[in-house]
Length: 234
Image 1 (cartoon, one colour):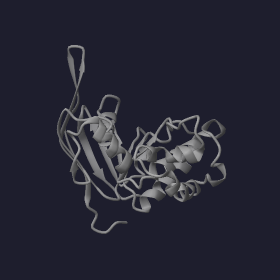
Image 2: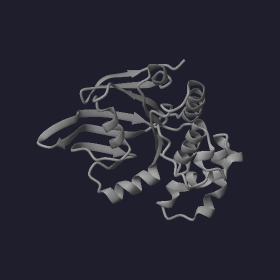
Image 3: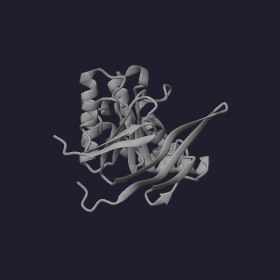
């Protein structure tokens, strides 16, 4: 646990409107959420509730129509695409349902991908990449490509990749959606362990059992926060 955790995510009156032909679709309708360092937050809600839009904005994959978003004290809501790309590469880690690995690259090369956008010397990070592969149980698979790995192993590569830039926050979008229950449980236990080490986790899920691994559950409905529940994990 982090003593005296600081607020690293602060979104204020966030509105997101999509234009579909002549129709305006209000995906988010004035959302206010603050998240402290070291938190484990699950975002839930039915289809169309705004949870995916909220994740995209938190991940700097999209910008709000209006409102403020402070990430680590920096207002990113109005940044241009190039600046947001830099922010994503340096401050955020992503774990997707479909893994989003590059088929032509090996395990170690996939872990390195976020570094490619930062202009760093990859050799300086070789030891760290190996350490992360070992952390997720893949030290003996460094030269394998995604097609040579199981779904669970591919998601472990994605988790290692999300950690290479020592992110301020890890965003997980249905991280066990493509996995069987046993493998999904193993991946969730790994995410739990990362949180216990101090990593901030924000996860979108439709599964109550998965959500209740978190210490806070935000339920979205009609583009607003319907419930914001703090809880003690078992």
